[in-house]
Structures are given as structure tokens and as C-alpha cells.
Length: 182
Image 1 (cartoon, rainbow, N blue to C red):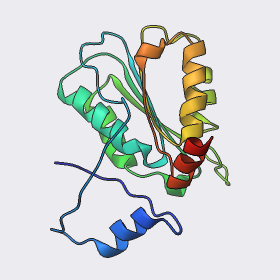
Image 2 (cartoon, rainbow, N blue to C red):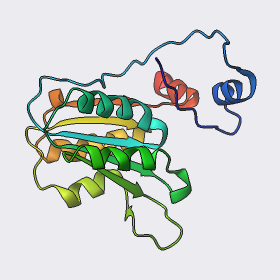
Image 3 (cartoon, rainbow, N blue to C red):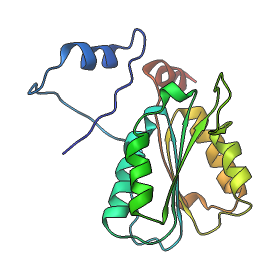
Image 4 (tube, rainbow, N blue to C red):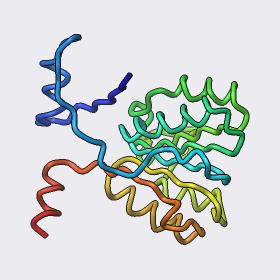
């Protein structure tokens, strides 16, 4: 079973094709993922996950696998979006916190626009607020490249080794072209 999370992007070839043209039962060719973000089951330390936007898809898979295996270590999910309307799967993750006391779900809004009771700010800054040290943790990241880069620098400063950071950055085609031409 493969689950996809597709965010409509104005003028986006892939999102528009998937959301407007595909029907149940259609055959498609899928490539990837190409990152290194999958659950390392044997790691003994806490699991810290950061997801930006639709980056929640691979992070959701990692968390669900860890919980299904019965891992008892701390598992924390920081889910960053711009504003409340961008959040999804909140009921799903809240229900998991009720079943698994070692799992914590923290939605974070970077541009809430209105007064909110949710955490606010950028994910890498919220991590700094919550932890002085993350040594021994596995950190899984998925989302926009800028978020991945900022979060990676932050968790490294908090003591996480490069070997314990696993990321899937979601580059747009335009970003890929710019990186290749640089």
C-alpha cells in the first residue's frame, strides 16, 4: 500500500495532473523517493521528526512504523505549516497520542495570521526552545529545502551527529534546475 500526499501548486504540472486527470484504477509510473529518511529500527535513542507541509507524508510512515513495532522510546512529531488551515491529519496524530504515551504531536504555525493557542514560529527555532541537547537522538526531516537546511544546522548544534540526521527535501523542478546550474 502506498499513500501519496499531493499539494496543489498553482501551475504545478504534477499536482494538476494528479488532482485533475487521474482516476481510481489508473496506472502511473512512480520514481523515488531519493532521500535517506526511513526508520532505523535498531537505534536506541529518541526519535525526533520535523515535517514541513506535505513533508508529513514520509514522516507519517516513519512514525506509524515505529509505533506499530511497539518502540517505547520517545517519538516526537513537529508538523510545521504556515497557518491553521494548512494543517491536516491532526485528528489522526492526536488519536495516536492517546494510544501511545511515548508519542507527542506538536503542530507549529509559522504565519498564523490570527491569535492561536498552537505553537508558532519556524520549526528549527521551536526545537531550540524545547531542547538544550539532542545528543543520541535520531532526527528525521521532510519538507521544503530551506526548512531542512535550517533544521539540520540547528539539530547539529544540539549534538545530533550527521549520521543520525535523515532527510527528504522536496525540491520543485525550478529549484532542481537552479541547483544543477549552480
